[in-house]
Image (cartoon, rainbow, N blue to C red; front, top):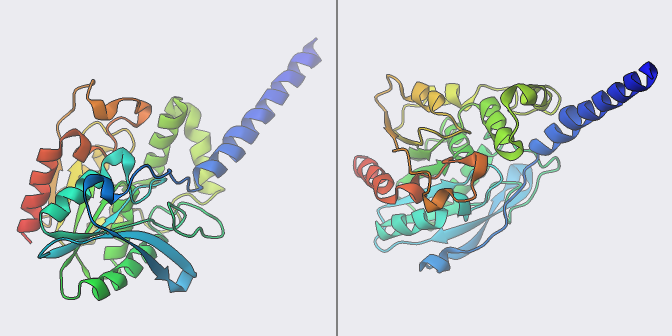
Length: 307
């Protein structure tokens, strides 16, 4: 009987190791793009489908170009991990409509491994460490479509990390506005795992270790938090105080004692807000525009007007 119990325990331990140290972390570092449910025409916007070559990686990106009348700038918008240019879960189409109405061209891109863009050979999320090249390629396109206009980067979650990485390498981005930016890949992955699995942090620690150590989560470079501290361009951060994925402590640290950063903490929404229905463990992550559109747009308007 004792041997049977030992054998059962050993089998369960092996199953746990395979699942939590192999299968799960391997899946988590792979980009899983959301399906499209709408396009800009559904919010009354004219738009063109455009392709963006990323020559150095032999990739083609898909994007929406949404022109404004008498535009005074271009907003290059970058979605979050496992999203796409529609940004259904964070109100991307709503935001694009507001920006175009205010006189900003908008280019919304699908990053590599997302949406209708090409996939890389490994299909991995790099949290900006590789995706920044997609932003630089998009800047090249913008210069041909709207020459001479200032270019503002906007993004949510991993889109924020990607823009930070791009802005350190390309001075054509003149300012950034970021919604719940991903500044610490490990804590964001842990929050994402909790949102998906509903398990407590201690049980997910080994999976996070495996994802970072064995599967290359986050890469070998500095975190977007450290990279962002080195930027001097104007930046607006809109942070949901209870975001369980991109946590407020990191954006607060980035903004501390940095005069180039305008930092705004959004209110806590009521639990029965329609935008939170069926969100589960993802909570308020990235939902500033859907939860408090007027306040979010007031902050963005004021920031863009100050440039």
